[in-house]
Length: 157
Image (cartoon, rainbow, N blue to C red):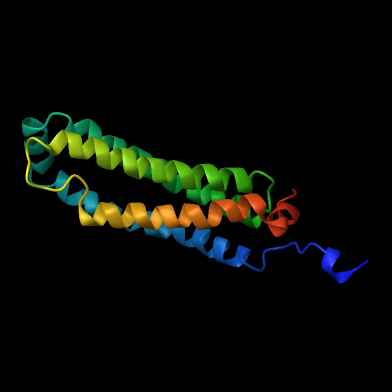
């Protein structure tokens, strides 16, 4: 058999970078938890809800979705190392879903707070940075997962 006809399989090549991202992702999500804690201290949550009633559903939706994404990212680690056939689809859905959530969340938050903070930009610099980061991740890794022969040859269990 000719050397060029061999399809490499296993957790190597560019798939190592995907694996590093998969492993780091839950820790990155855990690092966002402290951002929510000050809201629930010193009656800040109650004061914000009294001024902006939709703040409550917004913050709880963010918390629930972030916990769900965290749990999904833990499951993604299992799929990756077990080389399960579901890994590529789950990776793509999680990457796209996370990006869509960040964008929709930013739009909804902007709409909720636009009357209260009319001089603030619709997307703050941190949100723009996160959307760009996630978009680059999706633009690079989703096509790789879809097209890579190594991915097709590796995730077969």
